[in-house]
Image (cartoon, rainbow over all chains, first blue to last red):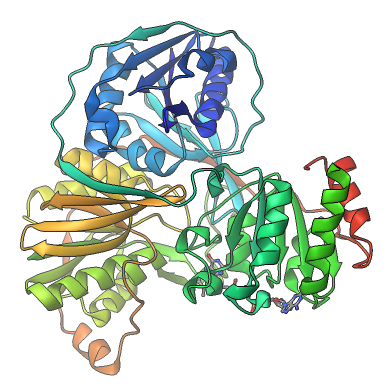
Length: 318
Length: 247
Ligand SMILES: Cc1cc2nc3c(=O)[nH]c(=O)nc-3n(C[C@H](O)[C@H](O)[C@H](O)COP(=O)(O)OP(=O)(O)OC[C@H]3O[C@@H](n4cnc5c(N)ncnc54)[C@H](O)[C@@H]3O)c2cc1C
């Protein structure tokens, strides 16, 4: 059985979790087994997990899951995996998923691969593909333990409805005592898709000259329902918050659309965004290295080009 | 306070990546290796800052052969007190975490720092695996850490679109992200004293890795860029909808 841990946010199943479920479904199909889901806490849309391929949702709604305590979560997930005899455990490669994978894998005496981008190859053994060297290469890693733990990189596959609403069954677990105390959770804007999950990203670099000019970036992001990002010098200078920094030392993303505005395309920047499906580069310097990685390039002054692009997209949507 | 920083060796961020004959190993010719930036800039410097304020020591721990000693010496030059090198090739996250946690079990450390991930395998698994083996709390992607007492820290942790503030008692494992500290460049005095600081070699434990590398590939080459007239953004909008189908 393939067990998928589904993450929730504000009482709802996260998009990244549905991707993990669909990944789990495809993996289960390959292995000729079933895909089931584990929900810790509550989600009003829990039954819809079935749409993406889980045949059953196991839920434990202990209040201990109200806050993210890595030890409590990983112990509960490992315990459920043992109880349900899962041979594969799937997580989202989110900030919580990344925290959990090593811990869960250790508890299950399992080999693990994080940030998988493809369904496992199961013809011979069980091997998983992921990006390495900050997306400069890909690697196929074979897991050689009976139980395997895999986390799925956001936007790695297009989810499809393959099932129907499913039953939610309660599962009893021994929940640990907290080892930490969460004092506060500060969410910036809950209506914006977080960067790792965003399908469209509009990103600004030093070419924007200063934080006061970000209006044109935000307006473009608005009409595209995109999330904003930035290059490292921009967040270093505190023009934008740190969590917007993409690249080798920031977050690695793979949206369907990445629009780079006034970003030169240094190798360390590309490392975090090169896997985007479509890249648009807007830069006044025709020699900017980013053009080599772009699908569409606009050589021009961003202060003129970006508002025009925003207007054109508004027109298209009208 | 006894602080430990786990450091890893990675190719320089500008390294051109290629693989040898059967695509299982990185072609190392022409590559400069560095200390993983998260380990160096954030984990190590934060540990040194705590030691400067609260006293105690900062040890660094590395899994790898003696040819990696230059990276360890750099950590000592930046300000670590002493170093331990577990004398075996690092082959997988589970193996590295097992070797380090087994070492830590024989010593008493208050805080164990790692970088948030390495820039080669980008796994982010080592910290969690060690924490599980040690049965310590694990706080990942910490962008802020302040000791409020000898045995208690307040840590801010990055997550999608926000931060979490956490109170944790020692001992714990923490992975360091941007914001934790400011990069320090070793000075001449640091480089000189690093030479005489203890670098202890530790015998590895028996262990068989739980994964193996089947092959590497380079990503497929990208098609040439299509340039759009800056006066004609309607055309770009149309292409994004009709050709790329992304809006
Ligand atoms: C170890 C290491 C790790 C790093 N990690 C990262 C990382 O994770 N992410 C990252 O982004 N960087 C990273 N960097 C930094 C990276 O090398 C570059 O310095 C950085 O990406 C440059 O940011 P930028 O493109 O915004 O600025 P610049 O390189 O200064 O580029 C600005 C661009 O804007 C264009 N421009 C200026 N004015 C206009 C205008 N009016 N209209 C149109 N275009 C205009 C210019 O032509 C130029 O191409 C790292 C560096 C190192 C050494």
